[in-house]
Image (cartoon, rainbow over all chains, first blue to last red; front, side, top):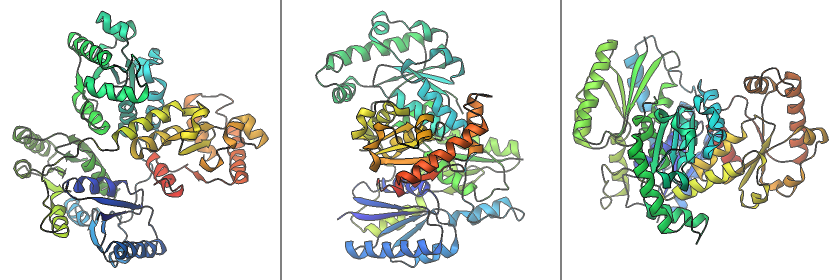
Amino acid sequence: MKRMIVYISDSTGITAETVGHSLLTQFPAMEFESLTLRYIDNVAKAHEAAALINRAGKSSAQRPIVFSTLVNSEIRHIVTGSDCLFIDFMVPFISPLAEEFGESVRPSIGHTHGQGHQYDTRMTAVNFALDSDDGLRTQQYDKAEIILTGVSRSGKTPTCVYLALHYGVFAANYPLVEEDLDKLQLPDSLKKYRDKLFGLTISADRLYRIRSERRPNSDYASLRQCQYEVRQVEALFRQCHFGYLDVTTMSVEEIATTIMSQSQLE
Amino acid sequence: MKRMIVYISDSTGITAETVGHSLLTQFPAMEFESLTLRYIDNVAKAHEAAALINRAGKSSAQRPIVFSTLVNSEIRHIVTGSDCLFIDFMVPFISPLAEEFGESVRPSIGHTHGQGHQYDTRMTAVNFALDSDDGLRTQQYDKAEIILTGVSRSGKTPTCVYLALHYGVFAANYPLVEEDLDKLQLPDSLKKYRDKLFGLTISADRLYRIRSERRPNSDYASLRQCQYEVRQVEALFRQCHFGYLDVTTMSVEEIATTIMSQSQLE
């Protein structure tokens, strides 16, 4: 029987989901099903949420676990009145912080975060990532903060997009093709940007599986081709002395944050 | 004087950053500067982190606030030994959950989340979003779960990318151009996908500012043109009876989660 998890928030629910997921990974033996109740920002929605939690508990014969970032006390009170284990990610931390900041700083309870000041930067960075995806527009590499390179399907594009969306980093990506790999040389358009280059590599087995989904039984996807490209690209990375990362077992979040740490983009 | 915030994690640091940001928005009068210490997963790195926190405290004459998702007790012990306000987002919640799940389920402390099972879906969804950005490849709209539409620069692309990266949703986007707006008609390639359409709109003032950054003093960016396009696109959305959202004051996270809720993609 899967245990019911409810994420509840007066805003996007992203914070509750993020901490909740992290906590639940500590219990790998358990199975969960989850539901997010977003924008629960008035009393009527709170009553609906409480009723839904009660119904879910009755139908599964176990009370749901509710991960909350609600801050309004009236709304919280209604939801905590339902039959659940209520785990609160916000309120218990507000008092110690308020105390630390001193009398003069009062928490503005219920203040939800609006559009961050970095919003325009992140939007511009996403457009930059898309405009310079897959070796496009190398003439705008002067504006890039980082240029990811590697063989086709090694995860460059999602990583660029993640760096742009979350950190406002201007990230371009350039796929190395067979000609570059045969010659063990960087293409001319990359040579003058060596300081911005960062390589991604991946196991040949995993690359083979990824490419096979896209173009089954092609030369491009063959294990032999994948083995050749990975061997050559790693030799090229070492020869050119720029940082690189084996992403075989990494999530896009892990790849992006590791690059942030290693390339001092922060 | 800005208060120093340190996010610390044995993994990406994303959870600590996410909850930390949410908490700090409750104190809008304060100013912060922050630093993320990622992949602190052994004793040596823990000692380095503790020394860094102590130095940061001395140089700013106020102890840093440390937001932690560390779970290993030895590593935590070293970090809590530094001079800081230590706020722990993981450990206090593990016991109540373990108790709820019962004797037979023991938390596997230190188990960090690896590559999620949804990883391939999300990668494929990002590729889909990029392949069908800006009206490209409408022939693959059968595969789309949602098609965002609206005027140029209303936030369709970042939203599609966010939906793909975070939720594995196959999201395409199609910009409505002047001809569609003049005629108040959907282009032929969209007509048969009315059930998948979702509109984004934005205030003419904000659209004017966004477009002016990209193409200053053009007809495209003029306030008059923006006013015309916004008025027409909203009329078209209403006439075609599909859902739409005014994104003027919304972050990309808010747009994406609102669409998830409203279009029952979950």
